[in-house]
Length: 391
Image 1 (cartoon, rainbow, N blue to C red):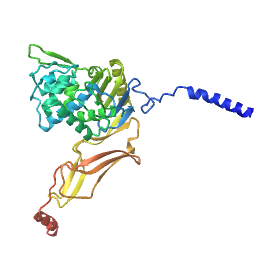
Image 2 (spheres, one colour):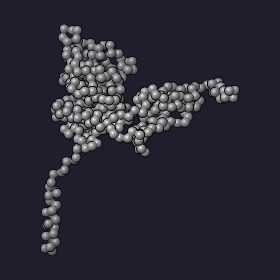
Image 3 (cartoon, one colour):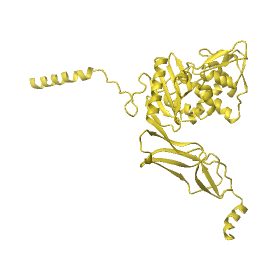
Image 4 (cartoon, rainbow, N blue to C red):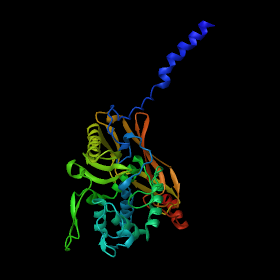
């Protein structure tokens, strides 16, 4: 009995240090090669802008306050309205009393003041104007509330599952959150609008330049001046969110997006994003498969008003590769239905371009119909069927 008691006592003594020891911290995520690129960030991601390939991530799906990075979605909806013809850069935007009342970063719009869409975009992208963001929201949707609904609908379309918007500018409010991953997704989408870097990449400019009170703009994102190739996108700060940044830079045909949330100060924020950029450009390169406009193949259309539809690349198709990797391991295959039956709508998914490295699928591109194809009439089908009989 004494031996059993003594053995139990010794077992407890051996286990006690393990029971009382503090929990071991989870190892910080690292990029390929072992580098911890954003040690001070609460959340971070580094993504290839063209393909969406994630190079590095850390707590990238954590739902956090995004502060003024919110304005990326505000700018995206504005650019989409411009490209669709709903809005022009020369259109005037009138400032409501509500928009003028926004605190925080602002361009000091007066109630009733009118400013062009072009100048509003400068105020949002460079000065992070909360007032300009709300004025644009009201211009596009009639009210900020209606605009926020559009923001959330667009987020869902983009697959941003970690995001809920409650305002157009990112000022602190309940149930307004996003993630580094989702911010990178909407940043990629914004970058599809080539004109946006005219605003996000400018270091300084003026508003009301020819007035009695010109307003000097200096970009809150200092990387556009101090990091070669950087041309956007948006900074953010609140006491709750800390220092945040969604940044983009390009070099030698490779464009990347780096997002950090919850950094302790601007110096650390800029330093860690710069390190992320350095890593991407040192370690990765783009392999081009097709350039926009290149012929991919053709597709037979059953009973269509055209018998065969040429498929041209609607964009540049490329894949991200580690520098030094064997490019001859990369191959691709166009997979489309042998025949499709009319009618077909422009933009309809009709196949995919599958990219392999060895036997592993590394990327798939959706191939869409370039145009509408209607049903052919009986006379056209008859001539098409019988034409070979008389050749």
